[in-house]
Amino acid sequence: MVMREGTKRRLAHVDLVRRYMALSQASWVQRQVGDVWSYKILRQAFYGGHGFDAFIDTTGIPRGTLTARLKHLIDSGLLQRNADNRRQFELTAAGQDLFGYFVLFDDWASKWWMPEDNGQGIGLCAENCAHCGANMNPALVCKSCGHEFIARQVAVNPGNDPVPDVAFPAIADNGRRQQYNIQNLGHDAWLYLTADRWSTHVIACQFFGLRRFNDIQQTIGIASNILADRLQRLVAAAILVPHTRGGTEGRAEYILSVKGLAMYQPTLESILWAQRNLSGEHTAALPLVHRLCGEPVRGTIVCKACNGGLNSNHLRN
Image 1 (cartoon, rainbow, N blue to C red):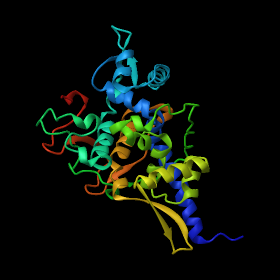
Image 2: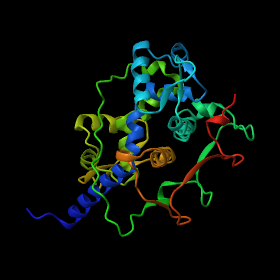
Image 3: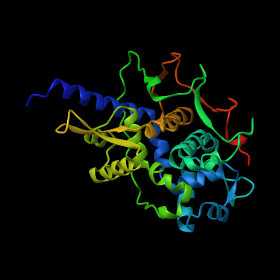
Image 4: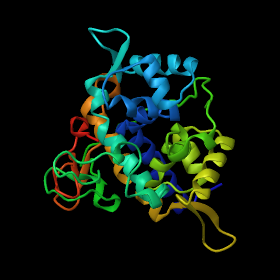
């Protein structure tokens, strides 16, 4: 059977995206923070060192689950025990550097998940900017030109070098079941969607231009039943929109809504975090260029109100 030229081009594109996503190493962040409890533990740790019981009090996590997640986050190099008080847990330097990823996702939730509460903000965005006192309103901007990053203004530019064929890392649930009741998550119910390793990978595929079920499945190695479930969740949350290409008899695709496109900055920040913090087998070498200024993508988190730089040291009530 002769393969059509259009099909050949699409499959070549899918293979190229798989290589790009593997090189980006955003998958590493999504695998380590890819559940509700890990997200809540790390977010709480931005407020300073916590003891075991303090994490339970502030997150509501069951004791056995907390023990497992703390071990996982320590093994991942994101948390550590305090040198002077071994019962206290604190963020490592790499963990502190995740502040941008967390505050941008909390900002997305504040504006798109529960906009009626936007005056207060969700999570880290419930705090105020230490520079101007305004409600936390972060943005990921280009260090070279100062403009906010948006999806269509960032491109992969490998130059004349061939794109290495790096294997996409296996994504496993490690037997960990999500032990929480979504009804009890309150303002953090959005984490049911976004603090999920499979959902974040499906969203990342969208930003790399993959829209078909089979293409997404082939790229990230997800089982068909799990992918169908995540697509259903993301469509129900109005993050993805189903679309039939070529009329009613055409092939089904999924495209990002405006709400989904607003997830671009935390997704990009996960790639930039990997470039700053991973080395050796995790080396991130995805060459991204900002089309507005032509410079390599290097980002920083700022307050939209005053343009002051934001990091975890600037949190205040």
